[in-house]
Image 1 (cartoon, rainbow, N blue to C red):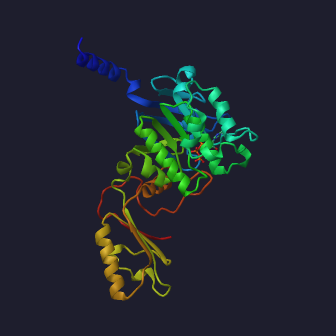
Image 2 (image 1 turned 30 degrees about the vertical axis):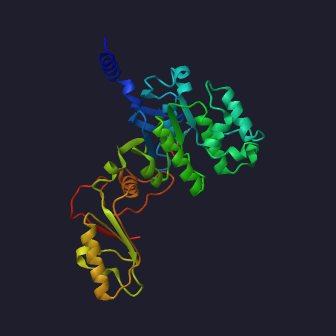
Image 3 (image 1 turned 120 degrees about the horizontal axis):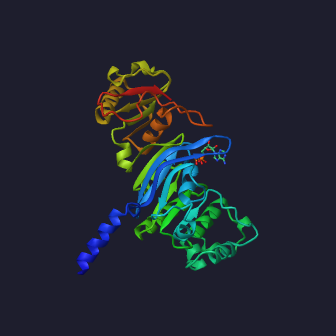
Length: 348
Ligand SMILES: Nc1ncnc2c1ncn2[C@@H]1O[C@H](COP(=O)(O)OP(=O)(O)OP(=O)(O)O)[C@@H](O)[C@H]1O
C-alpha cells in the first residue's frame, strides 16, 4: 500500500467513524436537578477539532450545567456526549487525561502558594508541563511564591487556568475564564486562547462578555432556558439583524419632531432606532438635525453586533430572564427577517 492510499484509507476510516469528526458532540442532552428543575432541555452541539467555541446565554440559561455534562462531571438524564470519540462520564479514565477543565470556582487550599498548588495538581497529571512554564503561560510566574489567599481574584482565575493547562490538553473547557480579570488580564487570556487554538487545542468556553465571544470564537451557541436558541459563526448569528442608532434629544425637542420616515413613535429624550437601512436612516436623521438645528447628544450608530443578537434572543425566546428581568427590547423579532422596512424606534 502506498503512502497516499494508506492516508486516504485512514481518512475514510476517520470520517466514517463519526464521533472523531468532532472533538465534542452532544445529542439530545437533558439534565434535571434533584427537586425537578430541568436545567438542560434537549441540546445538540458539535465542536470541531481545533476551534474555539463559545457558549453564551442569560444567567441561569444552563451553560454550566451543560459544560459539566461535556466535561464528564455529571451524567446526562438522557442524551449522549462524546469527547474525542468517547463518553466522558462512562469512560472518564480515558477522557480525563486528554482534557483540561477550568471550573467557575477553583476552591484551592488557601495556605499553599501558587507554585505548591500547581505542583500538587501536576502530581495527579500524567505528562504534566513543568510548573514554572504553566505559571508563566498565564502571567503568574512572578507570583509563584505567593499564597493563594493573598492572590487577587483575577490572579486566582489565572491559577485556575494554569492548572487546566498543566496536562497539555487536547480539549480545554473554560467556564467564564475572564470573569474578575482586568482589561489587560482579559486581553492576555484571549491571546493565550488564540495561541492554544493555533497549536491545535480545541477550546470550549462560556462567557458573559459578548465582545470576548465576538473576538475569540470561531463558532458559538446562545442558550436560553436550557435550550440552544441559535448557533453558528459570529457573522452567521448577526446576519440579518438590524443596525442601531442611539442619541438623546435636547429637553426642549420632543421625539415627535423626528422625521416620520424614522417611525418616530418614541417618547422620552433617549431614542434608539433599529434599522436594516443604516446609511439611509442615518442620513435622514442628520439632515433633519442640521435643518432643525437640533444637537443629537451621544449620537452612536453601529452595525448589527452579537449584543443585538443576544438581546433579541434573551428578550424573545420564550419569556424573561430568570432572576434578572427581561430587558426592554422593542419590537424586533428574534430572528432577523431581512425586511428592509423593518424599523422600530423606542425610548430607553
Ligand atoms: N445543583 C443544582 N440544583 C438545582 N438547581 C440548580 C443546580 N445548579 C444549577 N441549578 C439551576 O439550573 C439553572 C441553570 O444553571 P447554570 O449554572 O447551568 O446556568 P448558567 O447559564 O451557567 O448561569 P450563569 O451564567 O449565571 O453562570 C439555574 O436556574 C440554576 O439555579
